[in-house]
Image (cartoon, rainbow, N blue to C red):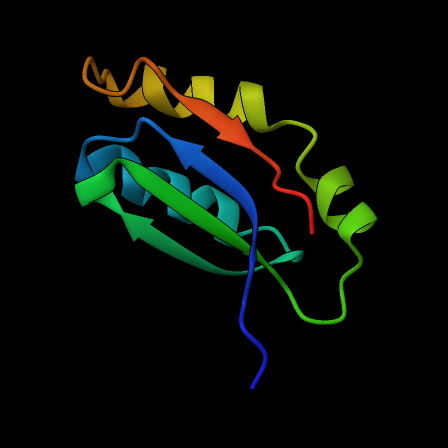
Length: 90
């Protein structure tokens, strides 16, 4: 069994409302296989679908900054304003 590695890590998500909204938006993308929400550490891990290249995954997520901003504004959240994200090498 191969270990899944996240293609995107989102940090600063401190509430369930935002985490669920992020999961809903990202799971709608065909390049995303799974999302692990580590709210206790204020982190969300987005995993690449099998048989999807890293380049395709990154291309499908070019709108991450706008997507995250839209989610936070739509939920009227004040605890998740300091969001950071990273596409770890892999």
